[in-house]
Amino acid sequence: MVSEIGLGCMSFGGFYGATTEAESHATLAAALDHGIDFLDTANVYGLGISETVMGTFLKGNASQFTIATKAGIWRDKEHGNRGFNNRPDHLRGELEGSLRRLGIDHVDLFYVHRRDREIEIEDVMETLLSLKAEGKIGGIGFSEIAPASLRRAVAVGPVDAVQSEYSLWSRQPDLGMVQTCRDLGVTLVAYSPLARGMVSSVTPDPSRFLDKDFRKNNPRFIEPNFSFNLPYAKAFQAYAQDHGTTATALALAWCLARAEHIIPIPGTRSADHIAECAAATDLTITPDMMAEIEQILPAGWAHGDRYSQAQWNGPEGYC
Image 1 (spheres, rainbow, N blue to C red):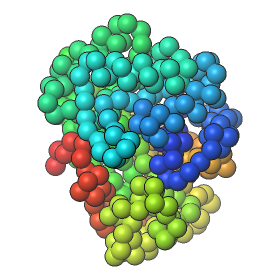
Image 2 (image 1 turned 180 degrees about the vertical axis):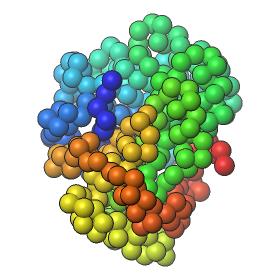
Image 3 (image 1 turned 30 degrees about the vertical axis):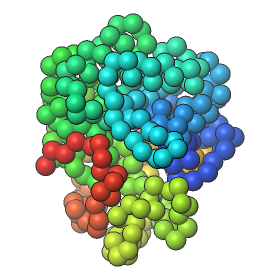
C-alpha cells in the first residue's frame, strides 16, 4: 500500500530546468510531511542525477518510502541520441547502477521504461522475474506499453504496475489501459497528471521555457496550439476557484475519481507545491462535478499531439 498521490522525481534531474540538491531534498522532506511516500524516478532522469540526489537524502534508509525506478532507455550524453535495450545484461547492469546511486540494495518497483521491440515481452518478463527472485526488486512494472502487451506479460508472471501518461488532456488510457489494468489487478501509475502544468494552478508561459525544458519543443505548447489550449486551462482554473480549491488539487482528484487503481504521480521540484498536490486526497468530487469538468475539458480538447515526432519514439500505440 502506498499514498494515493505519489511524487514524480524527473524534475530533480533538470528536465524542466536547473535545480539544486537542496531544493530536491526540501521537496522530499515536504512529501514525507504530507504523507506522500511513493517516489518514482529513473536511471535516465538527468543521466543519474535524480537517483543520486534521492540517495543523498535517503542516506541508505529508504524505509519511509516506496521507491520505483526504471531502465530500458539508453542515452548518448555527447550526441543526445537514445535507444532501447531490454536485454538481461543491460537491465541488470542498469538496475545495479540505480541501486548504487540510491544507496540501497533493493528497489520496491522496477519498470521497463520503454519496450525494446527486438525482444519479446515474455522474455523480458523472465529477466524481471529473475531479478525479483534474487531480491533485487520487489515488483515488476512497464511504462507506456499497450494493453495487449500487458496481457502477454501477465501470462508469464505478475505485473504490479503500468505507468502511462494520463490527465485531463491525455486520456488515451481510457481506450483500454485503464480497463485492462483493472481486469488484471494491475495499478495504473499516471504520470504528468497535471498536463505538464497546463491544468495546474499556475499556467505555464512558453516564452519563459529554458532550452532544456521538454515543453519547448512539445506540440501542445507551440503556437498556434498553445493559444487554443490556454482558454480551456483558464476556464478550469476558474471552476476550481469557484469550488474553493485549486486547479492542481482538482486535476489530481479527477484522476483519483476515474478509478480506484489509479495513482497519479505529479512531478515537482517545489516543496510549496507538495501541499497543493496532497490536498487532492481530501477533495471529494461529486458525479455532478465530474460531468461539469467534462463540459469544460471534454475528451480531446487539447490542440496538438502529446509528443513531437522525435519524442514519440518509444511509447506503444493501441488505437
